Image (cartoon, rainbow, N blue to C red):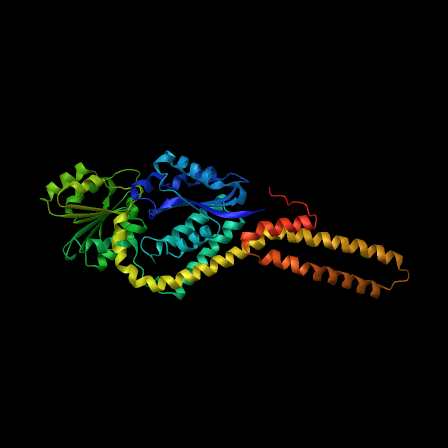
Length: 426
């Protein structure tokens, strides 16, 4: 049983939002996507992570199955697009690199804004969903739970989290480059999810005087508006309120544009062309990029927030180095666990065979020794067991402690030398 962790996908490092949104998987499609990605025994376990910044498949595969191409084909198939459309954006990781990537994502070291806490919650949700659907097994259970503990270590032992700037606060920071003051501004939130709620907190902290909240579920809009002393707006009526908004932040689950260039043209006319600032934090995007062609309309998407994050990266660099060292140590620990896990069937088979030989030869010897007292029989039993344990100590230690680069050699050698049957890999 030779297993490895494989990751295939794309993220903000490899693809712009215009490409990422093509593969974005909505909550209602995750179950079918997981089922479509599994392919036992080639792909034994799978977790799908789909966020604003990444769409990545984390899988446990047979090492000799070359599952990367299969996963890439199935991923684009789930997205309903041609692989050629994203060929240059897809990446694949395997082995230590894949494990390291999961740990870095959980610790927010791979985020657009290093240290932002939201990704850990998204990772936990993705794992929990896969676990409930039965697509995550022993290896990915261990890998993801380990990633959560790594993230906890990074938060508690370094200053990365304390220096973090969330995507929502980065959006507000970008708005501050457009407006010199917020206390005379009105903000409209389209969508009342986590992203919108965080944006509302940052906007109010920066002095925004009026806040409107529109959401497809009006009760949620009322709840959030009440919490922040704002005004709830029925989602179908939000176009009438746009002309009153100086800032519009979108974070909805819509599949297409909820704000078009033509509608924004009408809004600007009604505002007498006073500037309006828009940030689209959704993937797929909710605001038509063509809005940026209009005078006095300033539209930014999720990728633009990366520029804001750059200001803080140098300050966090030293703490990030400490975090990377923690990740590296934990990758090694996971690697040793996986090596031991793969060696277990061979170790068990070796012990069972040697013990069976010991017992058989012991019984033959005892049969020739008449008048053997029970105490003497126990002594022979203990002595032969000790001999076998001492003989096996060296081989078993090597099987448990070797580097995984040599795992196949050691396991195969042990099975050939001791004439052990191949384990059942089904």
